[in-house]
Amino acid sequence: MSAPLRSRESAFSLVEVTMAFGIVAFAIVVLMGLLPAGLSASREGSAEEAATEILTAVAADIGNTDPGATQSALYGIPTNPSTEVLKYFSAPGARVRANASGADFRMSISGRASENPSLRILHVTVSWPPEATVPTGSVETLVMRAIPARP
Image (cartoon, rainbow, N blue to C red; front, side, top):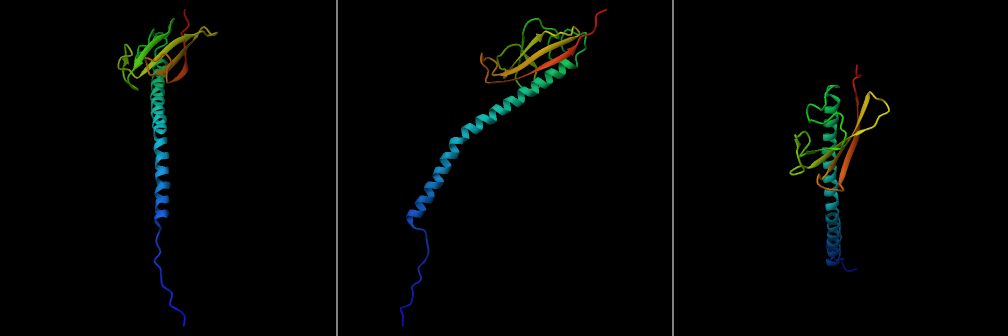
């Protein structure tokens, strides 16, 4: 007769458990390293979305202004600026601020030459942060506006 086989309980060895913990710890360290980059991208995306909302509101304000008016009704933007005009916003839809103090965005508006005398072109740029000489980000558009014919 042969000797009976002893059953051995199966379990992980200390080396296997240590290796598993090492792999998990490495993965957590890698994910923690990626977290600041993801948060920064999210913050920039939010700022760009807010700036685009401001740009859209300003373009609508200029577009809805009476053709004979000298400035827009909502934001007081000159319809025929001869020099660059700066306005500051704290948030989308917020009232225009007089200076960069407490503002989150700077809006620059300048007139562009047009070959058509009955068309006015405004170049509108919204950038952030407002006090920076080289902004972190910006969005821009051209707003075209008809000018009434003079009698």
